[in-house]
Length: 388
Image (tube, rainbow, N blue to C red; front, top):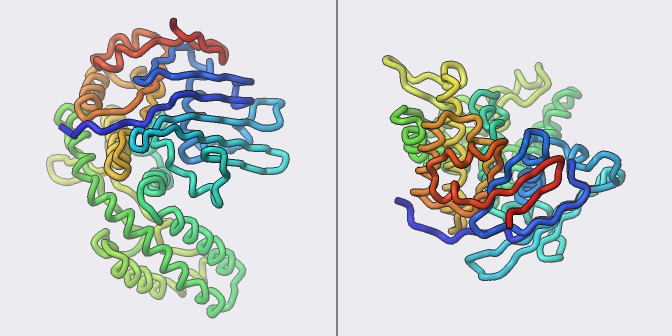
């Protein structure tokens, strides 16, 4: 059993012109709440707003313009959170104005120098039916998962990732334009330096959490076996990028190897932008990729296990249990997996839980003692009725 750790608590959330909410202000119980309502009533929008305060982007991949209520000029989200480590309250706000393309973020009333400096303050993990894409979707889905987890938990990763993306865009533009070799090569040192940090941190994280993924997949999947494997976007394997020096030397060698092909094709052919995270399960004779050969139940189990190790990563790096958002998860899972998922969450310890479900029976029928005892709020057409 994992030691019980303190948990960040969302005290209140205020929305203005966000999705289908013209205005909403809620105070949340410390343990959490179950929000019950039909599809389309605004349940997921509420969780989306909470998660927005973690990375200032939609967990559904929606553009900021899509989050503004139809006909409104801007949206505003404010959350107040009790931090058990410092014993103080944190206020985080975010606003987006489409007309000026301006995003404004504050932490305790002050604007950070860079929005990236405010990322990860909420410590939140969201479980959603769309998580199936983490397993069944393309490599970009899994790279995004890695980037979010590492950006909020590993100091320096976000800066290296942003620098890598900036250099990659410039390098690709030069290759497409047929720029002279010396001009393209001038960007290689920055490309290799930032890329080697991204490669190394991804490799280390996957190596550390692959056993944790396998354990959770086995527990939720009732004995089934699966594991994670990092597949860097260059010739060789994860062992070639396990430290920054190795990663730098490997990436340098790969850039030199494919230089001629890159000039012919007009695009960068090696680097972390081509990485993948393989999710493998064993057959009688070999390991196969769940993306290609997994059943629906296996894919759902793998997605749950990935979110669970995301939560564990937050616990390890920040010393607090994350805020857990469960978006209609039980409607998508069979009773056995629902029960085993909740049992593992309770055994390992979780923070405040805010869950949504279309029917009260989706919550009542769970075996999770803590979750089944959450207060029930009702939602209809963006209006929430708080239980007395």
